[in-house]
Image (cartoon, rainbow, N blue to C red):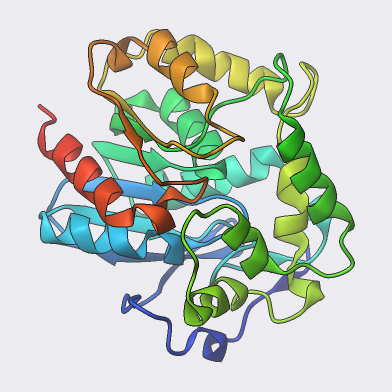
Length: 298
């Protein structure tokens, strides 16, 4: 597998993102992450999705650190400062789950983790939590789900998938902007484009939509059904924090609330004025919500 690495100078001058990158080897791939907050604080694992990177969580990181929580935000392989497999075929659902698992449970050896997953961060985080519930204390699902291919994806998602797979050139910043209700500043848009100097680095963003299980026999569907078997018995705290303006994942919120025991009899939150990338539209509110949730855990 041929790996590319974005030059560090591409990340100079990132707005409101003062966190020093850290790195770990996960099976021969260098994976990047940032941390904020006290090293001995309760752990919140912040997993981003497609086509963003840990920069997405900059407001959440600040709020959690101020609340005394150790916030850890990785860059998925193919994104941010993490290594970028050069071919679309190098990416698979199983590989992404294993890369994150190896970082979180092996390299960092995290325990009693509250995972916060948005978009692909949930598809990966929910899987890992279900497969290793002994290492996780709670879950926050934020504009995400765990598809098994048994329910159709919305048309807007298919439009997005076709665009990512077929566009001659990807305007990553435009894709992020299209998932926000607020208008991103030029320097913020530049930060989202920074990991991808040219088209050779874009295999990750192009690959991810095609890895979502859309049929019951899609790769990853059986593993997700097994994860659902665990989640339907999950009685640890489970919180849904969805934006009110996400046409892609919005329908997943009631399914999660009603299917998971740990989500019942809990005050779930719909963040007003927040689109798919609710960390951009309502980052401080999301951070405060996660901080209160983590601090309330037994």
